[in-house]
Every structure is written in structure tokens, then in C-alpha cells.
Length: 81
Ligand code: SF4
Image (tube, rainbow, N blue to C red; front, side):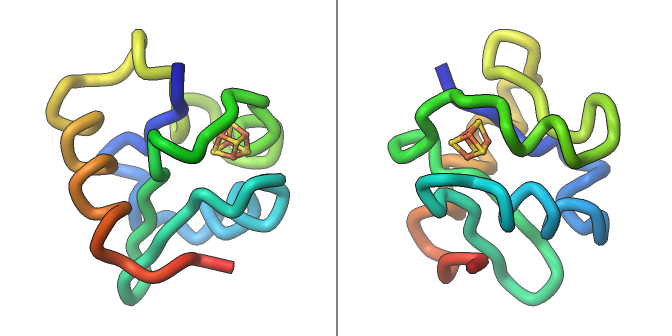
């Protein structure tokens, strides 16, 4: 299981709060856009406690396009923190 940032929140300013509490540093970013690396996420849920409801969801709740987008760009973008 991993968490996924949904498309309409990938550029939302609140996502940095999720990145700041992530214990394994699995948020990545390019400019003001964020994604979560599914290979590093430990499914702790901390990021969801500090971001708007439904901005970050579990992969069984996410659209496949959002799962694919996070996975693809997490390998290409720099760590957010
Ligand atoms: S669920 Fe935990 S490990 Fe996964 S992205 Fe959120 S804070 Fe990081």
C-alpha cells in the first residue's frame, strides 16, 4: 500500500506540509508540483493528517492515472525535503 497525491492537489501549497512530516522522505517535487514515491512510502498516514481531505489517498482509493503519475515522476524529480 502507498499513498498517492491526487491530480488536482499536486500543485497545492498544503502538500509541503505532508512532505515535512513524512518520516521516510518519499515526497519528490519539480517546481511547485509534488508526487510520492510508492517504493519508499511506508503507509504511515502522517501526510494525510496535515493536508486537505482527499488530497492524498491510499492506492486502493486512487485513480490509476494518479498512481501511474506519482510512480513515474517520483523516480525523476528531486526529493522535496
Ligand atoms: S503515508 Fe507516511 S510514508 Fe507514505 S507518504 Fe505519507 S507520510 Fe510518507
